[in-house]
Length: 500
View 1 (cartoon, one colour):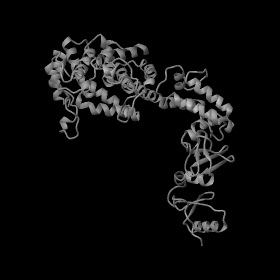
View 2 (view 1 turned 90 degrees about the horizontal axis):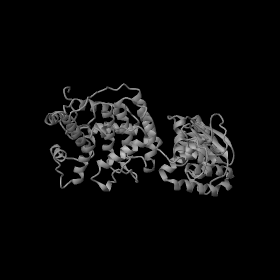
View 3 (view 1 turned 120 degrees about the vertical axis):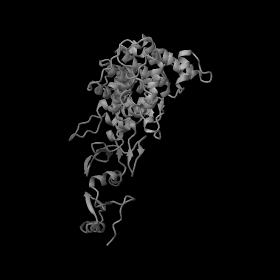
View 4 (view 1 turned 30 degrees about the vertical axis):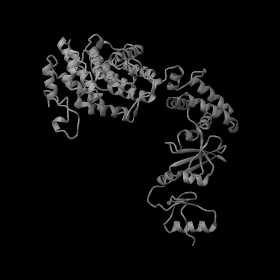
């Protein structure tokens, strides 16, 4: 008997054969229990894993063997291969539906690889973006719920995303490529649609669009849809939760002076502008600018000038335009000592922190506008404060100072609502950052709401009428400790005055 050899390096797959001797050998292996059939002319030596799992990890090996030269096309090309619904579309010599365990392969009669199509795996190609877009614009009728094409809304969102990530030049490259290949593919009418669509998104042609993101870009106010999704999650969480009200009356001059100092001190310390508290007090209360660190000194002083101004901190935006103006005027004061940081001007280059890439410069005003639409329907002061801080922090509209300006905007909401402000002490920095990451990266709102609620509770317990008393309370609570896993337990967390 001729030994059955597994195909390629993937030892678990054996293909059927038209040769009589090999076919008989396969049948004997199956009867002996050393081989099992998982689809027509497809066998495996893996007797444990499910056929679905085996097919999925060997899918392109299988398709390359059976349909050599096929092109991953239509919506599958834009999705990068097998879709979440387990459907894959291939342009091939004929049209047919192939059922494999866990996978439906739709063969569509069409051209083989053409200019711009890239080699894929196992003798397959994948359609270029231009070809895939043209194919997705073909008239499509879903059969058994399986459509070969994306909806117009999905195509527009995809084009908008291309602009956000790669710029307008990328859309023009795709349009030029589509113009070249459309005649050979028989898709000239589809190219006319694509040409109009790209022109509409870039604002050079009139065309009705269905996607909110694409319409906003066409109107000159593009925004970041992923960030808007986060804003929507936070908004829903804030509307669905009853938040505490920590009401405060009118502060005395001493209370305001001391509260504003510690607010400015801790807000700068979080961002790396680190002074011992006595030195910061000299800067703020006695005007002693550190000669070796004049810019850092002005950062603390600029923050204090804003948060100690009752009139300024009682201003909240009534319109999107007022939001932009408040951000810019406050930022101009905040970073007035750092002219190279372009105080009061929105960023012109992208910024990031670690793995987080913030909203692109051209999307800043549009994303703030979309976020403001949700903000204005919030009524509770703490809810508005929590939302506003996240909105500004996530958009990151400036080259520098974004965290500080976000916390200033947060506390202005609380001042306007006659609620206790929120201070983030040094020891609470990791709690603050981890809660922000949980919301920005996983969309988890609970840690963020808990963190700010606890910080406000903490702030409400400090007696700011007397500076020395406030300082002593903050020290007793561990507020000045740097978070560190090797500190003693009492140094590793924020202690609540009068409670812990």
